[in-house]
Image 1 (cartoon, rainbow, N blue to C red):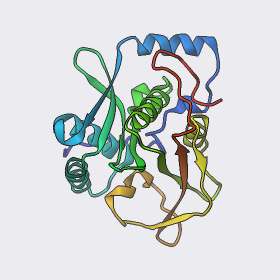
Image 2 (image 1 turned 90 degrees about the horizontal axis):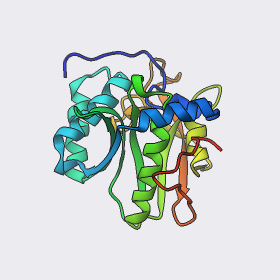
Image 3 (image 1 turned 90 degrees about the vertical axis):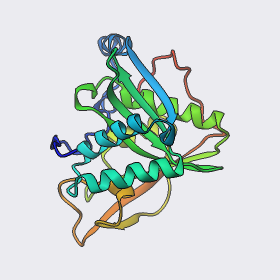
Length: 225
């Protein structure tokens, strides 16, 4: 884990395709990209190697300054608590191109660890992963999914906001203030420039699974309406 790539791309974990969903040419490109794309769901403790690869992707995209320390904390917690991981991979070598995780819970669960590899951004991977996870949560009987989205001085980042909103998530009232270095769970909010005052600010988005309508796995839909 010592060799880490700093991609220097704010919110690199979010699929850029959320910004612009349109065009038949883009849909054809997505269809070609999806030809050998597979999404796998597993409990972190039952496939630690794949969970480790997922966390390594997030670690690289989020540029964790403390290196392997955060990676090890994540891997230990994901396995001990039984996080449900959804990862996307391509080709016979199972090249990991994206993933997200769902925390364990009965009624309400949290979406964390959303990441898309730079070479796969713009291909609709984030939306496909998100809809897959939503369907899985519905099957497991969960009622609500929550997630944190970073709040900047000029507002919410539009790419992730439109991705989540386009898949049924809605903003909850209020703003969360998280001290810098508060913990590895907030690492997906860390970027190059922290907010003034030693705090990160975020908004909560939630999805009511009882009313959520998600497309079938073989349907191609845009990441935003």
